[in-house]
Length: 79
Image (cartoon, rainbow, N blue to C red):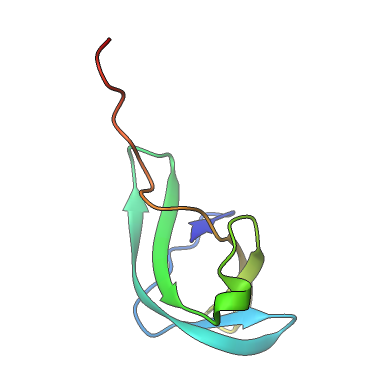
């Protein structure tokens, strides 16, 4: 998951779709390299398509997140 705001997804935070719990964050952290916060979560396969918008419940509010493909970062190869 790519967070669309400054919140950090943490282990155990609920993942929401249309305000309803659909999964759980397994890990998350700040990514200084990417410039946004990232996380991994268990969600139903129908919601795991890149580009899907979800929410992460952080301190009682839904923080916006987007499903992205792995790896989060791919080092450029020398030509």
